[in-house]
Picture 1 (cartoon, rainbow over the protein chains, first blue to last red):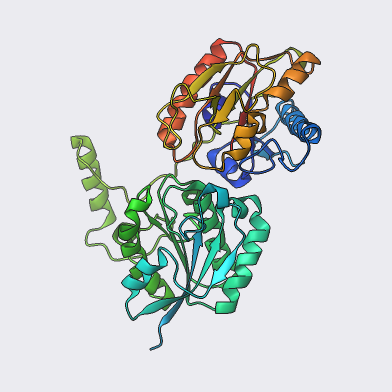
Picture 2: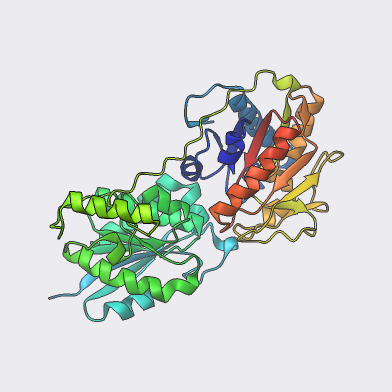
Length: 77
Length: 349
């Protein structure tokens, strides 16, 4: 899906936990996330901290979208 | 001759420990035959036996790749097997990645022959088919017996260090290895024969398939985020509560498009996941954990982004055919372009 959206001319950032799969499917901007069942959360945190964590990850994704990349790039935390 | 010693790797599901709720199961080893190992032992007869079975949860392995790999390697080392078999994983993505990762590591670091099996669209197949022998299987466990029938004799050959026949004859994915052999006819004759078949529109088999590189170059970065329209897309199956369009929990045949114009937060009363390939408890409690609508609304209000696109798109990426996902995304992308979306955040579970 990432590839088809990119192909249509829209920059796309893939947020996912299993980065090797993302690399295989051809995502160009990749932001690693927390866990498979809750990529953008962490149920062991209280609601406030969890939202702060999610915000940090989304900000990273937005920063990735603002970054020019040559090929596949993983934006590590 | 003594029996060939086999160590077998399977996931929590095939070990009968549990489904997605147990996918975080840590690696354990049992000195017995478990689950699909029975079928292997049957096929091995007196030639080989499974001396130990390693069981690991698919999520645990994929979320902790390096640690899980190291733990499993330690376990395997102790049994000094003649061959290490993983799976078969069919179309289970995380299981396939685990089988590929661990067989690749065992082959390289322990110098023990390895074998695994999976469906051609399993991401683990693309990742590892050049490195290790992977038998092509059906896309579901219904193909177990057939898969083991191909895998068991191949495992014996590998354990004995015998040379294998071609991928077509043995049933594994081509690894791109070329081997010399005596053909009955010379190259020029074979090439002309092939050309004539092609001209006639008949079927022919190439002797050197061209690799299929389908890379899409990255698009330029977003210049003006504060005025950009950002859309959310997910393969994590987030849908309005009760899944109004009945998106399938696996092998999805469709995607959903949902209006979030006035939505600032996804709650357990309004949204859930339709995805059957991960433990749904956390996403059902708070779907923002997969589709971060709450945070993007905040960022929109604060002016960091221009606008969160009115619709989000969703499907379940669980066993869904690559061709389907491609078709969904091509349609989705067309709409996004028409709607003037400047960038997409795509989340996956």
